[in-house]
Image (tube, rainbow, N blue to C red; front, side, top):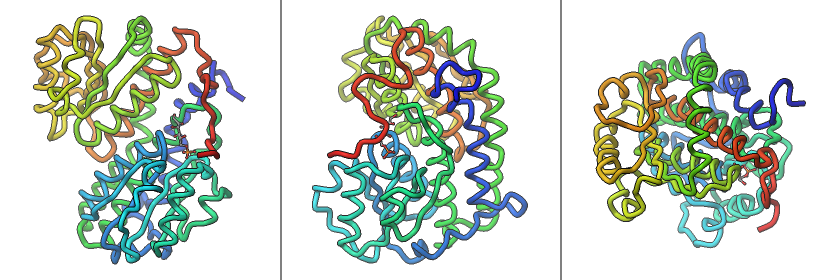
Length: 365
Ligand code: F6R
């Protein structure tokens, strides 16, 4: 049932404040602002490193998770798409743990990577939506994302719930390893707790701006997305979402890689979507944006109130979000990214919930 939404994808985008609150309730204690103990399937205090593998959007969630596990838990993370991971013959320590992220819990390549790690003696954790799935069944620890059924083929709420769970796991691992102090943990969990409310505010306010920009995007052949830090995987997720439902060619790049190739593509016809909250990378990303502007590229800057106030560029358009703590920025900035893809596809008249050639669950290699 789509309720009063035109598509399941739209419904699932708007469900995010509610499902994220529900998912977080499972992993954090909002009264004490602490992460609830992660169970004994994986001993995060002892593992020397972490392997992560997944496909598509789940892989991009894992990439953001890598930034968090490395930063907060000081855990080195080896991550790859499952179709590569399973064949790379990666040397893995049996003392390590591996996380597999999957909405369906049935993706063939992800399952094969899981079995590879299991054979090498690693402890296995599953970050899944389908708790009765094969991937969940074969794991030592199951971390449900509690997003509820996701019907739209393009993943939206599962992505942000995967992020919320990975954030909680990284903080919990940091606490177990002594790399996150009690005060830091409380501040981080407090930020997570604010997320559902902020998501609701953003969803209630950005629609007109997004529709306007989507009309422009629907006339384009190619779109480039740029970001730094955790905004880099989010740039790739934005490009993936746009191409899979609108069929417009899109690429996500690390902002710093622009000058190593993709800058050759920039002209007046190439919109560049820059994802840049006012974080410690902001100035660097803005200077990459200037390189785009100097070549006549059309910029859509997705930033926060502080970033909008200090960026002096005559950008084509700015989408302004509230200022939020760094740990929740990827989830908050997912919203305009998802809505831009959605409305562009709606303008183009594509089958948003059932894009051509795609299946919700990929159970063959
Ligand atoms: C993109 C999308 C796919 C899936 C991928 C993995 O919107 O939905 O890229 O993320 O096929 O699927 P799961 O998470 O079921 O393993």
